[in-house]
Length: 367
Image (tube, rainbow, N blue to C red):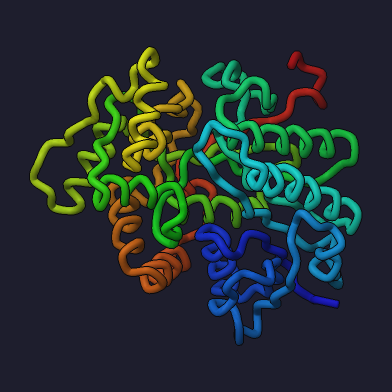
């Protein structure tokens, strides 16, 4: 039986690795859930890290992970997720983001874990309620756009149900699109950067997104292990950038003295969509609509009017610079990010723009 206070899932990803390294730097004992196929070399040999092999989609494989001395005083940080910007149904994303996450919730209740800190998404929030004076925590997969947001909304609704009916002690972190160092070449941010810098794929005109650094999200999740009321969610967002602004700053970071050349409007024409898609498929060229889906399929909200005014720790250009450099440097770039994150003061007031959403059903208010 383990005496670890912190349980962490998603240790194979950039966010999970940061959270683990930050907790260990504070002298905490951490138990991590890892697939047998994952690279655990970053964690081996550390006396404060206990590696447990299992996957969230298989409850039985997590029995050892949840076997700890004082479950009521333990905190589980669920940072595991699968991101795809494609419009098509992704069964892997559903298994990880819905089935796996709900299994984690069920096991937390069964083993009486003291608190769950869950990585959700700002885009899982009901868009009808964003920007209103009264911030209500409400999730409906039928109200949001994109398969990723739908998977997050479905799980968040499940968690809120367990908070209300089973007294689950859970808080949610709701970040906008996460960037920064430590992400693999297969992650969406690096697909975008590589498509532009290496593939020469012209970005689309129009659209935009709000970005937040992975280190700010890690700080917020660790802070919420001790702060925040059960059934609350915290929006963590940084700067909003249009597509043109984003790639202009990419040019500046890379020292490219040239304007951003956008793709022809024909690429985004709805009436010609079938022919355009067929062209890219036949020619085996990258389709800008797929490479830059982050900008073309963006929710209308910029998440600018619901923050409490706190300043972000990592500025957008610094985060973008670290994203590009860490991508080219690999493990060394990720290690540098961990060092910087460890030196940050973990306080909610400095963990990016944070707005608290609270479930109103328990208070008898209109939903």
